[in-house]
Image (cartoon, rainbow, N blue to C red):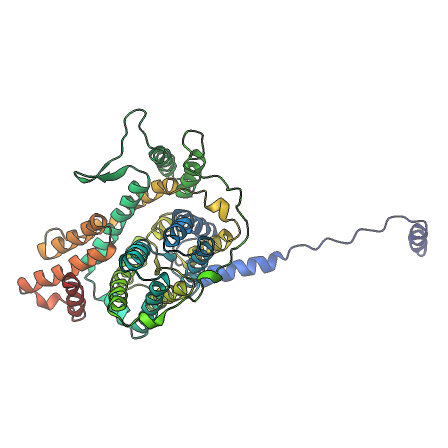
Length: 473
């Protein structure tokens, strides 16, 4: 019988019996597991007590809270005569690349994008106010980034971070939280401009609810309930629910997809490398350059310290882990952004939303960067997320960033007063840099006035003098 099996098989083949189907290629689970282990080891998930799912969710949360920049930046800069579609692509790329660098090189859960404030200064202060071209403005931004890279290479910016007193750092984290909350309240039309008191509540009487108010309220309730039940991803879920609610008839805060929308990256060449160096060394050029340097430098330091403290990542001496790489990434981001026609690119305080959602490593930033990459192809969908939908997350993040206030020494006036002034100036002046500008010089003055100069590090003196000089400038 040894040959019978062969003969039957041979006959079956001859009469057309179906041959056995080739085995389907199975995914190499070993390779997938190996890659996952490599990621976990590179970003030290175990040391930060986190995991891949948490980091990925945090990255998406960070992106959702700052996705508004993809539409706000092109809208604002297009007022200066720049091409809107090119600006969208430029904004996405100028956010994606530095955020990826921050994640891979500095391994910090910080995202970067064109900063709010300096984009308005570039349009309304430089182009409209001085009558200069937008090409002149981005030339100043480019040079600012180059100067930042030099300062980083010389360790000047890193030493400046270490020169900030510990209680001022703690106050900065709280101040950044209040600032974030204030932005959320404004985005949700809960706090509005008021001629008599500068700010006031939005109208909340029956029938007078602003659509943004309603969306923010719903998102805030949903997010709060989810947090109370300890649901993972509460912030991200709240943003999605608020976005869907914002599309309901009668509210319609969430925009639909435009008829001429395209799901492909737009040409960035109309704004690429459009520099005008011939007007840089003028009075206007020096004024613009110095203003951007001051504001951007201290906004970045404030954000880095505040978010890292929230994530409990600060080192024992108060320094930022991988500070030089983080600061170099920030400097390079501004230079790269200028090449793509952008106002200064900086670390985003909305990164705190991802940190609160569990992000502790650079993989959070890697995921955020990937989201910016996807936005190049799905722009119409991402542009549907309104500011009011992200407002609840920003409001709640402010609460969680209040934790360092418990560490402040409220019994010592030389520590408590500068810290309080620093933290309260950030939201009220709408500037992180203003908190440092007031807090550090005041801290040094009080220490000297009480003959406690031994407590003042040598590096803090030039920082205080530099910041104090900004008052007169």
